[in-house]
Length: 366
Image (cartoon, rainbow, N blue to C red; front, side):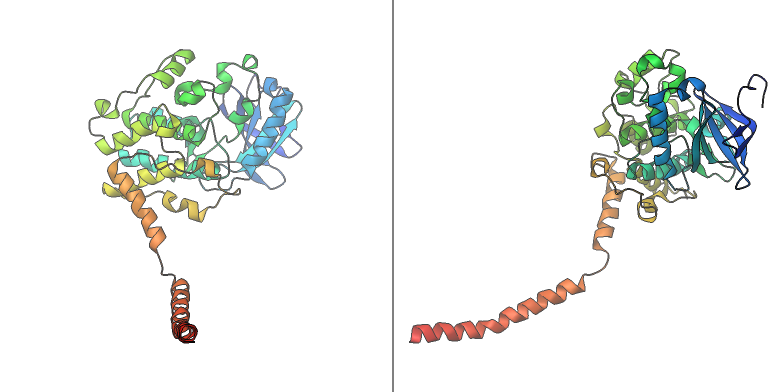
């Protein structure tokens, strides 16, 4: 324990031994800890006291933690447990080695196209899986995207932003909600987020990785909210002319002010980026293939038709690729059973023709 944190318990629930602080934020402190029962390292997010004592938040937090614990995906940080100890809520997660994406952005500045898309595609796979389970993250930002030394991407903090929505506006500060640089226009307007809101936030991150700067910057949260709602971002090619036109079109599409103008889910966004990589001769070697993610990782809850990808406009090559993918899926294999049944019916009907001719002549001849 560090100085000034002696009030924090060192043993949670008689099971988790806190070892060292690995991160702090406006609403919680993250510790490296040891699960004494299973004898393994874990990460524990210990929420601040003023949040933990709020009854509405505590109830919503428990609901969201249960939902997050049901998510099992290689690109999502696994939630092992949650609890309440001496007036503090906590959530127990897998310990992920590496850095969060914001730290890497600060160190790297501007990413290559392949490096940036490799990370975003993996994030799309994990978030898309959660969307199919009916969960919208609501707080996608580089701080919540972890990158391991072997370049595996894991998204964390599912459900926490949704739990915060149970708190009245006058009961929390801007620091609780985190940085507004990545909020979607509808979130900036106080409207309910959708899967397309997470797509927008990923678009902001991709813009930042490729250009080395955010699309909107201000020290005033209200001004940032206004920019997300009303101001068009500077096209990325005006900052980095080497960005391909097609990729710029994709980025500007996901940064559309209207949710219906974006790709509706991160699954669709990930497929578009993956296709772009392959069409431009980039190998795109990343641990998770998002094109097969829907088939290989069905969600724990049946997909909600309301969040299926929309067939709205997209760059021509990307549109053709998605259509071709659908055509391949719809034409694979021949339905021989249907063909044989059809032939059998035709033969049966053909055999009745002489019988009906005999009946007709019998009636008319009589």
